[in-house]
Length: 552
Image 1 (cartoon, helix red, strand yellow):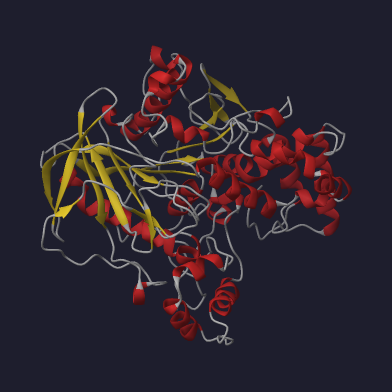
Image 2 (cartoon, helix red, strand yellow; image 1 turned 90 degrees about the vertical axis):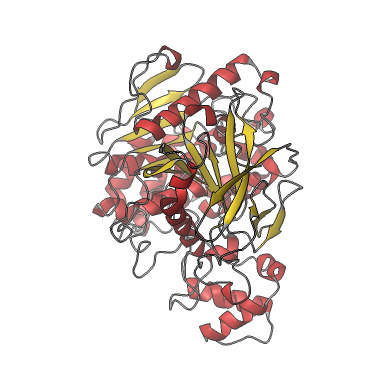
């Protein structure tokens, strides 16, 4: 059940963005910054309010992971002699289809971008927002085309975005370390170290960094929250998690070495052994497209030791997470696009109706009898004592909760006693969100805001460059959203004081027994106990047994 939903989500992410293209004009003033590796030249762009900000794009933060560096830990970049042109993005990491026609898919992709309203070289130290892009660990990028900072540059913060290895190149590995696990997460960690070392050169403070992400980026943030610090250094001081938590357990993999060996056999018919060193040689010689199109199982792995050895759910249960403020939430119906499948889902829905234990993820430890009982209770809850064939909306609501809301709420419940957790639901359905193609198929009792829609209210991806073409209500929600997010980056609190523009709402931190959350619509309002979490939690707490791998 959960794997079908994830594959649908990956397809949705691809379809939702496949036809985008970007054309941008840049004003270049030859701004120079001196890094240890060499000089870079940036340029000046304009914020929404017409203010100048400084943009530095496609700065190497690691050596290209090609040749002998493929499937190996990221290495620091080599120095360069000439002034590096950092005035545009040209590359994203290897994936199926580039979403923007001016971007090349390439293994040479480990680049970072900095946008700052402060002239480099000044003594000011502004708060920093470090963005980790989403895309199911298989798609997307951190380039200007995806993460245009136009709307946040007037808030007095520095924005950093970057690429990291995707798909098999970033999330295939072996348990013996020959091909290190979680290379994509380790790219992200190196990018954080780059920020810690260099951001002061751009007017940012290394002591005031918020890491943030959406979907797979949000899950990444959750993994960086777990485990030990960085040799005494604190690489970040707050976190924003949009539509994803490692507690939910999706986009993970098991039996990593077997998957890696299967990839070796797929790209080289002569490889039939189990020697991981030989496997590495095979994969380093293979064509990138052959590796990608072999479609190996890939995802985040729990490692034997190190910063990613704690897992998701287990880390928050045990208290092995960093005690920093977190802003976290979900959209009102993350899997709403499943509505288009109603006509072909009758067999699947009938199977679930007959075998409701399938509603419980197979990795959750329960006896067969308890799994059936728990599944039956979930079916009753979501179908109002009917069936999924009669209530397709109930199936959509269950999928949204299982993949997103339940894990997010469980993380907040576990972490809120130790640190502020600002929980939200994004419920505004506007034209800026772009996703309307599934609405004619959507059951009337299902919410409408799908996965990804919220990001369009934060970043300019080319579709929102001219806000005047959108309804005033869309513009209002965008500006409220940006203010809440940038307030959190600056103050670690999205509403540090009463503000009429934010409807005088004070966004309170959640507590374990009262999951208060901000409902983000045209009007902001505080509410309690989101969706069906309270009822689902009672069912799962009663029947699941250790070891606890995930919650959904």
